Length: 166
Image (tube, rainbow, N blue to C red; front, side):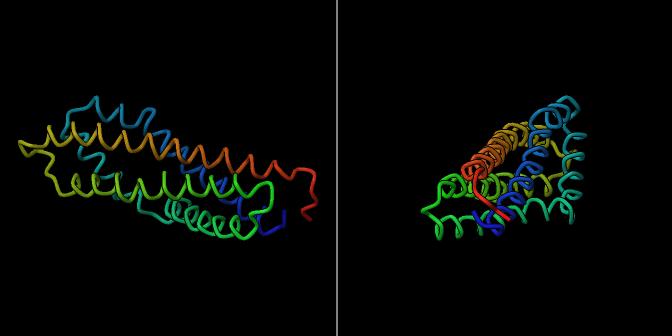
């Protein structure tokens, strides 16, 4: 395994772990806490979170890991004859499809609908209840996908533990 592959996969592994940890926190306690407050407060809090999350540190980890994973897909295909290629390809697909695309196609549209809502409108409670269930369901998927990517990247790195990298 060459240095480019080791560095790229290690960076993607760390990014997927970081992003997966953020999503795990939301699935484990943030959404449960928001579900316990009145819907107007939960809506306002989540609207604020959805604005604040668009920041350099989160986007570098989230999008940067997707970009690295796309590169890993190409490298794994090019180096398909290596023992780690299947693990790297599977990890990269897990992150891109299960974390990045689920966010873009599942969570973000829900966030956009919530952003357009008034927390005090008569329909707010129903919207919030639907949002909590659907958003959390998709969040579980992207959490699991990020953790699967971490596992597969680690297994791929271990496939060549006896080989010289440096």
